[in-house]
Length: 72
Image (cartoon, rainbow, N blue to C red; front, side, top):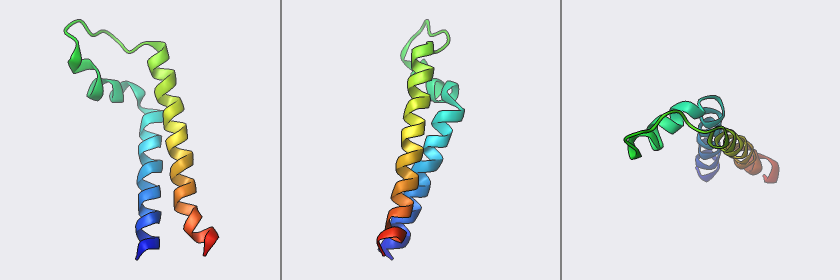
């Protein structure tokens, strides 16, 4: 059961990373836009760092999902 939970957690992390990578503008709207009255668009740095974080989440999620299969 622990292996299944670990694999599912890895899949969730990878999916979250894909969402961060492919939709950084939506991530900004959900997490940052509401904090400012004069919020325009997200900065280039925000978009690039969110995409970079998404790639890290995807890689970590894939590794987390595959690790129990490799170590078994």
